[in-house]
Amino acid sequence: MAKLVHDVQKRQHRERSQVNDRKRLGFLEKHKDYQKRSRDYHKKQTTLQYLKSKVKQHNPDEYYHGMSKARLGRDGLMVKSRHGDDANESSLSNDQVKLLKSQDVNYIRTLRLNEDSKINKLKSQLKFESQGNHKVFVDDKTQLETFDPLKFFNTTSDLINRKENRLSMEQLSSLESQEIIRNPLLDLKKKQRKSLKLSNNVKRHIERSSDLLSLENKMNYNNELLKNGPKKKIVKNGVRTFKWKKQRKR
Image (cartoon, rainbow, N blue to C red):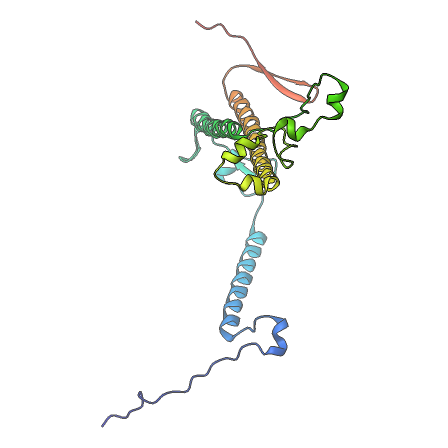
């Protein structure tokens, strides 16, 4: 008869969590966490030892074929040339580089045109408030002293200071919704906040469009430098420009 060893519930040994008195110290590291951290540490140490040994064994005078096509860049790193007979298959020709850069310029131009269309669309929605004062001319001094703006404009005291859309009493009474009568100042502030938000949005799109335009001009300038033909560099007031020699074209 087989023993019922596997049917007996075994006691589970669980690791404790961080005690309340040491909660300020953060997460309590378990043994499995320590193992992962240890393996990662030893792996990095082994990599560093290997790299140190490669540096010690490196001979700076040793020749290799990449030396003839390599040069130091502005950041001090080795840069391999794309030109020459020994260039690898992944290198690009000068015509391919110009084609890729022209595609980049087209992409930047498309983004700029999209920004311009957004600006025109938002400007059509943006309505600026009128400026200035409403002047009323009277015939004599008596009318000036007895002048009542509420009676003259036939409106309420809440709408008298509006420079535009000043509704009369007949227009207010014909409205089905009386919200503008109950709280006209709240409605005016709401419109002002909406207009301010819209104007800030237009400003951001204008700034992005100008940045894209400057980037497009710079990329066009660099593409012009890739063209063939003798050119002369001219530096004037710290600005570098190039002038190509005139050639007769058939």
